[in-house]
Length: 457
Length: 109
Image 1: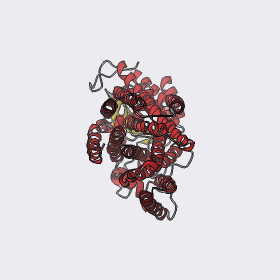
Image 2 (image 1 turned 45 degrees about the horizontal axis):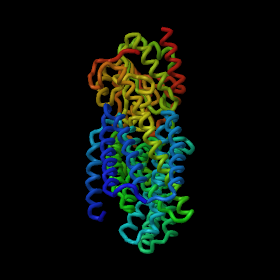
Image 3 (image 1 turned 180 degrees about the vertical axis):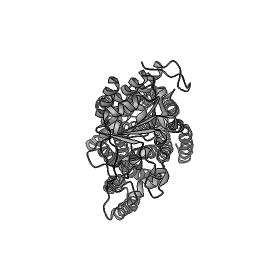
Image 4 (image 1 turned 180 degrees about the horizontal axis):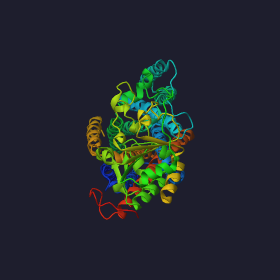
């Protein structure tokens, strides 16, 4: 039985939809972001209460138990996860959302007679399954359960085409017959397509794929709203689908790449899978003490943190080093490339966690002109985002990507694990320049050594 | 609701979705993606409806699985986004001014 008049439940859904719009709007500005997120959570709460009060539901104890189980698993994980591992957690949450949408669509098939509704079901099944499997592979790549390099095998484009064609045929068959067996087949094809879609994507591009799959899940949720005739699902899903698309494009633009290039680049063989051949040219390797002297007697130091810093979890040590240098009266800033870390904006989160003042975090556009005035640019675990090849060599896979102009600084110090190229798999000529010195080792260890040496000056 | 109204709402929602995030700085890309990720966890509403109308035990089992997954998406998504944003927020309370006032650099701690 329903406790609430349909008008009231519609009004509650409307309130929830408004909350979601305000949430996305709030999240777009640093000042209102946290409140925005809380408004979104409030909207979700309103919607869930509304569905319990308005829909004719049975099995309520079971449902409540399932909700408790889901929350009991997800909340502690979300609260305890290391901030460096957060991208894969977001991927995981996105995947299970897509999976839930696909399951909802599968179960609704038996009630659907209208071909348009069946079309929406087919769409939800396919896109939800792609999102689920794709996010799973993304998770495995980020968690380093599998290689982060693009996985390509001969005939991949042909297999992908065959799977998609089969999915279209199965989809049409489901619309015509409403057969649940064919729907399960479609689900499986969607899962295979999701895996094939993400396998050829290189590690550095994975964040963009997460964002894209996020938009996919949004669209699947919107389509499931059409199936159930639920306006809130339509609005919320469409909002995420649309904003996720914009966000994906913005992220890809920050890396100077196109979304199509990322997804299909590997198919054409021109992906981020570059050569891993090492050059024999000499480099100037340096000791922690030398680096400390360079830094300690500089006037202006710009630290360029990158992926390596995130992996080594050296953000706290980097923040300490910055403080030690500032205590010596040195002007220290952090130059944040839009795609530094494992996700766009990830580095800001990591450095904020390490108590680096917000004012010291400079975005690329703001800081690039300032490298000319810097005595030392300290590049910690970053490579591709400072590689001049992005500007100079038209054939390079990263050509066109905006970079941090560290070459303009008087001295450049790289803290690197090895001479291995970055994700893009291409060499960085800057490493061989006369003003560059290198300190090899794990980013965190190297930073700790440099920090100790600076304090001893 | 009839198909035409749903279509109208969908198209309008597309434009709202484009508009609200059109001017986001790259600093907030990750939290915004994570927040949007949490919002699509609202598929929980759909999962609850399906589970509440489930006839047989198999249908119920699959529907409950959807409820668990959707809840994980919804709750986990909002919690992890809040954690990310908490770090930005804590920072600003240390500083004397809001971000945007340049030069008012807080030295040390």
